[in-house]
Amino acid sequence: MLITSVVVYMAITIGIGLWAAKNVHNTKDYLVAGRSLPLSINMATVFATWFGAETVLSVSATFARDGLVGIPADPFGATACLLIAALCFAKVFYRMNLMTLGDFYRKRYDSKIEVVTSLCVSISYLGWTSAQLTALGLVIWILSGGALTLTQGIIIGAAIVLVYTIFGGMWSIAFTDVLQTVVIIVGLSVVAFVLGDMAGGASKVIATAAAEGKLQFFPSGGLSDWLTWIAAFLTIALGSIPQQDVFQRMTSAKDEKTAVRGTVFGSVIYLFFAFVPMFIAFSALMIDPTLRELFKSEDAREIQRVLPDIILNKTPLYIQILFFGALLSAIMSTASGALLAPTAIFTNNVIKPFVPNMNDQALLKAVRVTLVVFCVAALVFAVNSRSTMYEMIQNAYKVTLAGAFVPLFFGVFWKRANSAGAAASIFFGLMTWIGAELKWYPTAIAGTDIPPQFFGLFAAIAAMVIVSISTEKMLPSKHHEAIPHR
Image 1 (cartoon, rainbow, N blue to C red):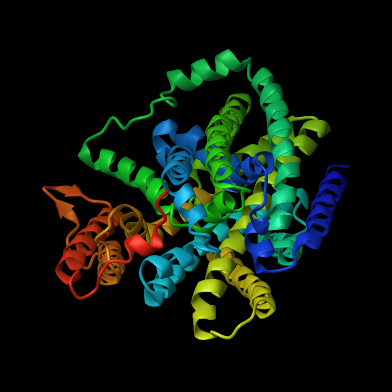
Image 2: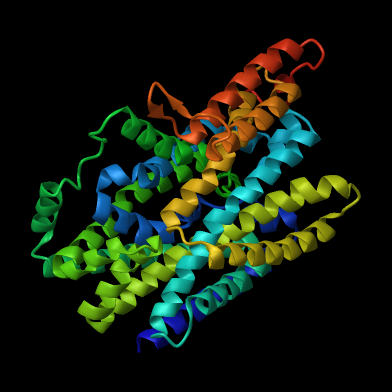
């Protein structure tokens, strides 16, 4: 019955996605839903796309093991990203009438910066997309009762998401996100109520979590612990701003006011609801203390089994259906967006500049072909990774923090930023970060080890400022003509 319910739900989702594809007539429809989504749907796409597998399985399990201090990146950094993007960038992006985030770098700087930053953004998505495919494969593997391997589950899950995304693009994502948002909220709320009751009630669960120090938010160690915590927060809070999925959700709204409101409301709902899986995971440990053994596994991914195991072994069938329905909704909504986003920016801003005569229909076809190629690449990455989804996502955003955030931020807010400064920022930011990761030079200052992404971020800022100022007479800034003011 459980497997039948899951299959029916996934079939309905695919059906909705294919039905939504009738709205796709050109590239604009495919990438940003024709910039026509009302507030309710825009808000749902922000929430459902951000509320992914890592929130339900990985962040919740990490909280159960380490407490709030162990998860500064998600949901806290992720929420900060959406709020900053909405309040500081949404109106600018919307007024510039951009198709992809890469278009910003071209209009503000030049086509070379467009290609390089778009490559950085596209590559960064491998980690996030792979995390979603891994989660989908994990669920299918668990539900199969061992009949399938994890690798086979990942392949099947990727094929399902690919089917409805490849035809409808952002329109399919938008319509399926509405259904998935409802299923997530209703399903996880009921599961939280039932498991909380099994654990002795919500007040007991919260009190026990507090007694074990799980509700401590800030680190209690020395400078090294604080720097690690701040780095994890900033990596997603800033590093995920120059991401195509954030951009396309904001710019798919029907107007700039909706773009801002939809992203803000979606982020607030996300932050509030992210605590529900955490509550469920800690309740699970109270119900079955043997689940703590998963924390000792050498394979970091094992902790992600906390919720699926307790649901399958300790709850009635209707709770299993609600949980896995909500989980699959969270995964598929995020996975579809994670496939479309890098595909859109790579095709439009890396391939298209080298094929200047490409018409709209040819571009749409190229997007769909690239979608399949990127899906295969993410599959390979997912099958070979041994990191948790939480770790995979943090690592992904280090790329854009070092190589794409500074040109974006300074491009909007600093009039003197020019293409030479942007190029230097990208080069020195990435090379300094990579060097720190590979230990090409000492990363400890005064006995404290500095997180590698800090070196990349600071180098990117310094290069942007120094080179832009020193070359401004030769390469005037394009801020006035690129950034609309009204």
